[in-house]
Image (cartoon, rainbow, N blue to C red; front, side):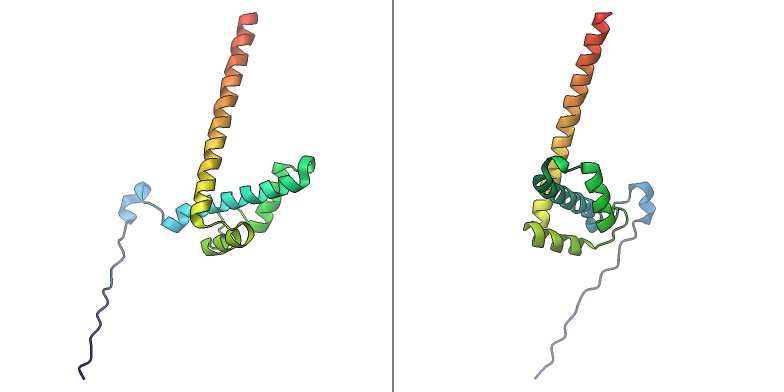
Length: 129
């Protein structure tokens, strides 16, 4: 019986160091912060729901950072964070990315509302003089 040759193609890694400032991070590096912040928000919302008035976002962020590290540290791998999100919240990578996009939209809307109310207050104050 003839033996079958298997050929696996090996690819050389592309050296993008010449791009310098224009180089793009790996996908897992770009997604890591989205997953990290989505988990932080979900944990915060659960804690806020249970603690009600006693909840403080700044205190929560400090505690979360002590447990999970800063986003730049990458204390846990992307896979570990995804496993945690799946176990605790039943969320997949896609769910977490959507959660992060919704959170960014809310923050932008809040900033726009704050800026508009600040501008209207400044106009009122300037017309009073």
